[in-house]
Every structure is written in C-alpha cells, then in structure tokens.
Amino acid sequence: MTQNGEGQEAPGGAPQVLTFGAPSVGEVLAERYKLEQHVNNDSLGRQMWRGIDVVLRRPVAVVLRYPGGDSAGEMLSAAVAASRIVHPHLVGVYDAIDEGDRAYVVREWVDGSALRELVADGPLDADRAATIACAVADAVAAIHGTGMAHGNIHPGTVLIAGDGRVVLADARADEATTPEADLRAIGAVLYCALTGHWPHAEAGPTSLPDAIRDNDGNLAAPRQVRAGIPSYLDELTTDLLNPTLAVPPADVLVGELSRFEQEGGHPLFAAEGSGFHEFDSAGTVAGPSRPTSRKIMIGIAGLIVIALAGVLGATQVLSDHRQAVPQGPGRSTSTPGNARSGQLTELKLSPNQVHLVDDVKGKKNENDTDVRKIVDGNINTGWRTDQYNDSPSFANVKSGMGVLLDLGSEQHVARVQVQLSAQGASLELRAASTAPSDLSGTFAVATSEGGTLKINGAEFGLVGDPKADAATNVLLPGLPDKPVRYLVIWISKLPSVPTSPGKYQVGVQEVTVSVQ
Image 1 (cartoon, rainbow, N blue to C red):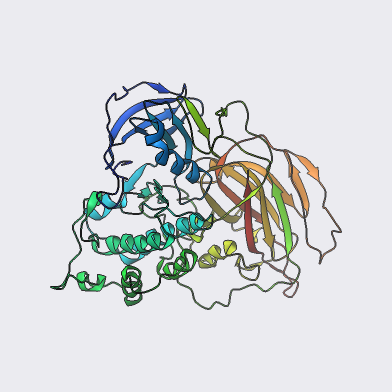
Image 2: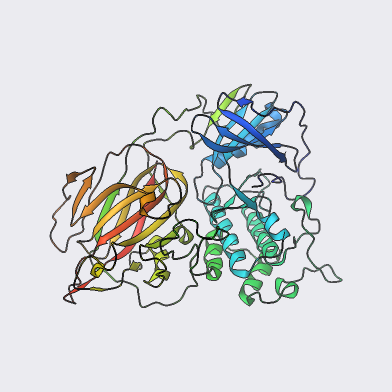
C-alpha cells in the first residue's frame, strides 16, 4: 500500500517542511502508536509511517510534521475537521497530536494502492473509472454537506483498498478552497482514470504525464485520447473540466456517475475467491438506471427494528483534550474515532456497499440487480426473493439467503432498521469484523421468527398490535459491545403470498443502519 504522495495537487501551494529529528522504528508516540515502517515522505515533506495502535491492535498510518506548534495548525485543523465526518469513502482520522517540536495525525491504514499507481500501469476501463469517481463524489458530497470543502483531490489522495473500497484521504481545505474546485478535481480524477494523463498544465506531485493538447493548448477529450469511452461519460468529464460551465452539486454528480457503474461480479480489484465467494454477490456497484417491473409497491410494510446497543469498554483509550485545534506540546485532540456520544447517526450507505448473499454457490439471478435499491431511501423500491413453492423454507433447496452490508470500516452499530414487504419472515442479523467467506465467518446478533425477537435465546414480544396488516416494530436493546464492519441480514423462512396460495416470497424495501 502506498500512503504517501498525498500533498498539494498544485506545485507551490505550500512550502516544503523540514523533516529533521526523524523518529526511529519501534518508537511509541503518545504511549499508544508504535512506528513500524517509514513508508516515505509526501510532497510537502511530511513523514509517512505505518504503525500499530498498541491499545486497539489495529494498523494505522501516522503522518508526522516537523516542527509542530503554530506551523502545524493547518494540518491539525484539517485532521480534526475530517474526523467529524464518518463515511465509507473517507479515510478515518483517529487522532491529532501536537508535541511542539513535532506534530502528527493518526488515521486509518488503507491496504491497497493509490489511483496514481494504478493508472501508471495503464488507464482503467470506463466502468471502473466511473465507479472510482462516483465513490469520490459520494465522499465529497458528505464533506460539502457539512459546509466544508476537501481541497486536495488528485490521484495520490484517491486510494483503492485491496477489498475494492475506494477512499479519499488527506483533506487540506483552507479559506481559499471552494466546493467548485473539489468538483473540478473530481473531473480531473475521472480524466486521469480514463486516459492515464493528468489534465493540468503541470502534473505536480501526481507524477503522471500531462494531458494531450492541441496547438492552442486546449485539452483533448477522453475519447480523442482513447477509443471506446462512452460518449456521455466523455462529455461529463470534459464539462467538469470546462471552467466556463457550471458544475453540478456533488450529490447530483453521484447520480450521473452511477449510470456507468458495472453490474455483477466481485469487488473491484479484489483477489479472486476473496470475500463472500461461497455466496452470490450483486456486485460492488449499481447497474445503470432503467425502468423495472420488480418494484414492490406496498401498503403497510412489515417493519423490524433490530438494535445493537452498548458502549466501548476499557480497551478504548481516549485522549483527554478536546480542543478544536491542539495547542501546546503534548496535547491531543480526540476525534469521533476515539469517543462516542449517546446520539445516533444514520450511516449513509451507497449501492456499492450492498451485496446479495446466497448459500447456493454460483447463483446470480435472484433479482440481484435490485439489491442496491434497499439503500436508495425509497420505500417503494427494493429487492425481493423469487417465489418458492409449497414450503416457506425456500422450497427446501437452500437454507436461506439475504444481504451483506459493508459499512466501509468498523462501526459501533446502535440499530439496524429493516423494512419488509410483508410480515412473517424469519430473519437473523449477523455480523463480522472481517469479510466473511460464508455464514460461519459471522456471529449471530439477533433473530426474528414470526414476529418474536430473540437475543441470546431470550424472547422479546412485539411493540404494538401484532395483527396481520400492522407494521411490526421490534426494538432490540443490549448486546456485548463489539465494533463490526460487516452486517448480514439473513432470511431463513418466507411469508406466504396472500394472492398466490402455496407461494412464498418476501421483499426488503429499505435498510437503515444507525451508529454511535
């Protein structure tokens, strides 16, 4: 993995900093972060280290700057601001510490490659390029939603993990940074992914060749550089880079780019056979928008609310200082990665985080392209099983099926809300910290059998009137605290179809995950 080269995109944007007094391998910073390998220096001269959080036993990236104090204020401020935004396509920021003679930021270690390294071996196909740009736009939409801008989007800050997750790193926003500049930069990243060239007069720290231009210096369109690029994607890219045209908001851009996301297959860049290879996946990204007859229009949907509650135990060590910006030697600014309040936050999930799972190996056609609709915010769209004859247990051809949610990083899940098309299905909520290859790689959290909730064998009754046409609301409190990244909503029994005797089927209309 390269975690380096994530400096300012444009040369001269900030002075190089000194890196004297380098720490040594094995040194423990703040009595917690052990340095294991000096990866490199980024384009601003900051030292990039791979380390380990000795308390939580997780790998971390440590970005050191010499000196600390006032000169490190911008770096620390940007880190603190970034830490307040939890999003699957943003690198998590865990800590920001100023020791006076040096300052450092501790963040998530992403094991994979920067986009810069991928395109150095050749441009990407249109689907992959659009998927990466869509993920970046999704992250930027979350940032812009807070009133901030990123200010440092280029192929060195777009990271693609080994499991296919795309994350944006190293926000460097200042007062001069604008949302428009971020959106133009997304266009530049898309251009780079499609062509292998960087569309600016100077390549800067991207280490990529400049784009092809005509005699007047005008940028060549992607299709002029490389054949086979869809015309709409070509036009969208050039429009984003055209300063005379207005750019759309980031969330609108996400919708435009999602038209080019691929259907089916395994996560982008993931090793063959990794992840839920024993199960069917609906793909890491959503397919093109199109009319569908599979939409399930419902009256009163079955509603199951499965809650996971708890607090992080003594293994979570918190910094004592909570200033907006660290001041003075040895002061640490805690981030949301270190502390949790009692407030719940709805985790925004994108279509490429939802996968269909099935215990029949190789099965890929059970309405799999609709599974992404369970996180589209529309109760009238969703995914449904096929209809099965004579038995609610999937006609006894398999033990069940369901959906896998990749939360992007480990989260303290407080509640999972599942909205169904009908009452009476038997569900199980399962979880895992690492990508499971089958159900044995997950642990059971709770089950709902015909409206009865069970936690560790204890039954909980329904809230409200459990008549056949009523919504089923069940709140499940109290579980041992365990941060997880993957959730599986497993369906083992189907309700009957009222209009078709002897038929069994259920739809999942919407899934909402709330975290602390």
